[in-house]
Length: 388
Image 1 (cartoon, rainbow, N blue to C red):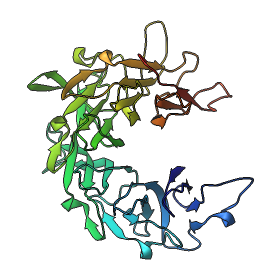
Image 2 (image 1 turned 180 degrees about the horizontal axis):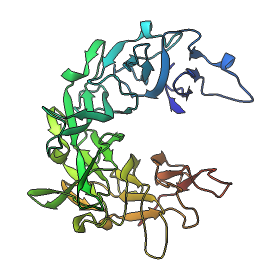
Image 3 (image 1 turned 180 degrees about the vertical axis):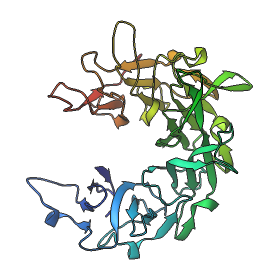
Image 4 (image 1 turned 90 degrees about the vertical axis):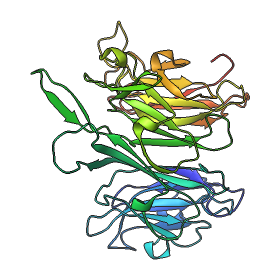
């Protein structure tokens, strides 16, 4: 479910995303009572478009400068290809593929799972679109593991967008690197880095341009010193990255302006796991006028507990370039120690100022939390404040 302004300036509407095969619907924001799909203002289902299945939809900001949010959909075609369709607002009648403003074709269009974010990275007044493909893999000339194998891809396309857009020609292209680690037999295992699994955007360094925030919960590159990078040979704990705007050309994960590594990763045995499962622009949590960063890590562990807690790390802005060990985060928000596999930190978000105290607040999801019953799930609201 998403919210945005799709019909008229000043309004706010709701998008319901049913997943592949179930369609999408847009409702006017003033909702009361019990509603059905017949009450939606705009709807797209397989009954209307039998050859197309909508797999995901998300607002992507204002790509055309009309003060309304636009939407980007991933669809599945009979050829098992997954292109993306951009519909610019106002969306009055149709989300059909034939009415799309732009069709974006990914480099490996057979991949279904994608992460989306938007922001004005180049400062031209139009929101730009970032598309993550954590399944992307380029083995090069053979199938053997190489340190420079590309694994995971984020493509950035500057707005405004129209017509056919080939993402091999994206304005910026950022790749991760395939990882390997030791197994119990003393041999290397290789595994996907999941680079681009989570994406967010916001101005974290206060220069007026939006910055790109990326997560890689199996990431294995980590910061050693000001001018040296290394490979975590044992049990990489995941990473998060920030690339300051503007973004242009071909980049790699190690080109990030900021890289955040798991606690203990420098020693080869991280105390936290799956750092970067989720990332978010947190807003101004401590009220100092600068934007803050929230990084979800579903595998955080602590002494005294026999199982994974999960949680999130909060870092106050403005942020300066460099490498950051998350042991030095400004705040660590731990999941409850009662529920194994609560996966706290699976989703994180800046919630705005929910209690109207002048400080932005946070929401952290735990889909496996058992307080309401086995695997009932939970969401935690954390209020911001001075010296948080």
